[in-house]
Amino acid sequence: MFLATLSSGIIGLPNAGKSTLFNALCRGGAQVANFPFCTVSPNVGIAYVPDLRLEKLFRIVNPQIVTPATVEVVDVAGLIRGAHKGEGLGNEFLSRIRGIDVLIQVVRCFEGEASHPEGSIDPIRDVETLKIELFLSDLDILQRRLTRLNKLLKSQIKQNAAVEALHKLEKALREGISPLKVISLPEYNLLRDEGFLSLKPMIYVANIGEEDIEPVSSIHAECFRGFVRREDIEVVEMCAKLEAELSEFPEEEKQKLIEEMGIKEATSKLIKKIYHTLNLITFFTITGGKEVKAHAVEKGTLVVDAAEKVHSDMKKGFIKAEVINVDELLKLGDFRRAKSDGKVSLEGRGYEVQDGDVIHFHFAL
Ligand SMILES: Nc1nc2c(ncn2[C@@H]2O[C@H](COP(=O)(O)OP(=O)(O)OP(=O)(O)O)[C@@H](O)[C@H]2O)c(=O)[nH]1
Ligand SMILES: [Mg+2]
Image (cartoon, rainbow, N blue to C red; front, top):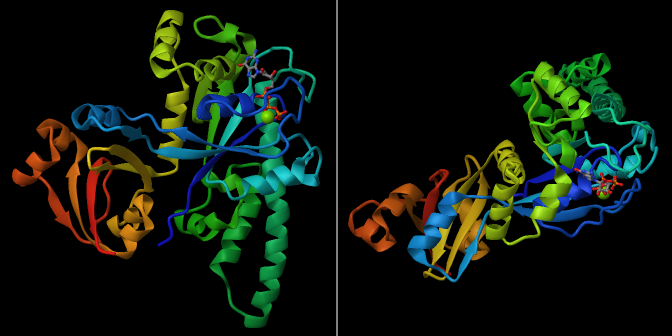
């Protein structure tokens, strides 16, 4: 099994605050400007996954380095009406996000000075615009695929489950219904690696202005809250600008500022949501008391494949793994003691990694 890096991609209209959100998630680096299409080539960064268990491990191991798990975040160019036909940076944008595993859609709810490609602030219209562009772009690809498949099938004269699934997807897209609501799990599995944007999980970020932080609110933020309730969609509300500024402070200072301002920080919440949506879990390694590290793997990963996350040699020469759950280890306070108490289990290559496992790999070179 090859462990691919799963990634999340930030999408939205120009000037929605995508690069600002990228900076909040990845602590800086992307150019932010109040003119549209400021981002042309994509910014790729990593976001640290907050995990209290890692902090607790730090306290009992006292290592020189603590390394959190990460998720990849890609910030692409803005998408505008007509993108599927190549408007704006349309095709470049759309091809860049086909390989991404979860989409984060930034919806502009803040007023601000930055121009809006449609001339006014209207979050619900913007969500609809983006949906139409993603659907039209998928329809285009789908039709080309169907034509190719039909030609193949004619020569073999047999019915094909993939063609049926593609037809169902086509019908949903034409009717403007999210295909995820109508296709079955086997159909989804047939299509999931084909890069259809409408089949990717989507997390919405309502980017509100500094003045909209609850309980005070603008009409746009309120409007979008109503939409979210009606549509039953997953949304994280935040002021990306403020959170990007906060991300530049050291952790302790940042927490103090958050407390003083009386706001709820949403960046951590969003990172956790991305992690969860990507179906990732965490295992930990402790290297000779020097480093405590959290690693992200997909649920269902076998321990021999997880070894590769630490070092490729560990997979090649894998012998066995010693495993203990982090909470159990924290209770006992010491790996050696846990071992002598018989709390550490010995696992072979077929063991499925569980969230919170602390793993000590044995391998031969
Ligand atoms: N007032 C306010 N301004 C914001 C907020 N988020 C972003 N902005 C501003 O909006 C402008 C655009 O932000 P960017 O992050 O560059 O937007 P983008 O979506 O990456 O834009 P493109 O790359 O051009 O598609 C900048 O001037 C930001 O400072 C916010 O929460 N409040
Ligand atoms: Mg940008």
